Amino acid sequence: MSFRMALRTLSAKNAAALDKELMSDGAFSIDQLMELAGLSVSQAVFKLQPLNKGKRILVACGPGNNGGDGLVAARHLHHYGYTPTIYYPKRSKSELYQRLSKQLQDLAIPFTSDFPSALAATDHVVDAIFGFSFSGEVREPFPAVIEALRDTKVPVLAVDAPSSWGIETGPPGEGPGKGFMPDALISLTAPKPLVKWFKGRHFVGGRFLGEEVAERYGLDVPRYEGVEQVAEVPVEGEGKL
Image (cartoon, rainbow, N blue to C red; front, side):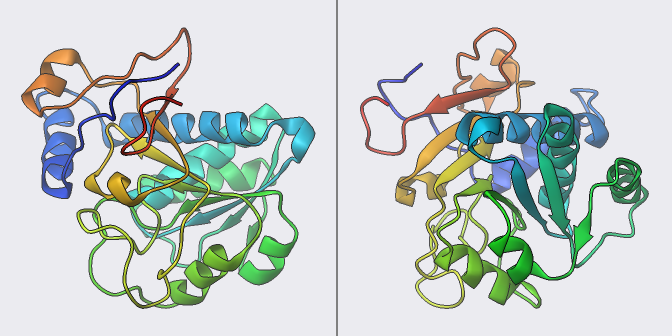
């Protein structure tokens, strides 16, 4: 499918407000939203990296909600027939994240602390390190990880934002993320302003946004087809896919 115009974007401030509204007036739990987000990430991987092109998926997870989306995606990818490996160096102590981690451990999905070796032995990478709430400096151990993602020839799918990018300002002019341009991006709920700098394939996922709420936030609801949890949309400035 294609759109003739790029979708309207959602600022970091409004993204936080929308999440809060979905979990209050919308009656969603964070578990539900994370499950739907992670499911959409897994479907984007399935489109980008068909099983016959390589089953090894490295999922790099940060300590926040973006990392939780990556953990959920890894579980779904395992059930699709992929062999995911998890890099999760700063594990959250939250009960939710501990449960997500145990679900993966129960499936014998390996966790690694050696990112360079895991990157050298994978077919595709999911960058689930930092999402729309990221700001400020990239802290250890992630600078070297983001540099490796920037320099690798392995395809990278970024979840909601390429890690280290400013949500409103796009790619950094200096630091480990300078020059980092993933092959694909999946925007959760709606694209963020950074998409105007993005040049790869772009998906929108998170099929839970009603039209009334979308209109209140000035957003477009993609035309998801059938059971699809993702829709591919043009990057900023493109007329069609």
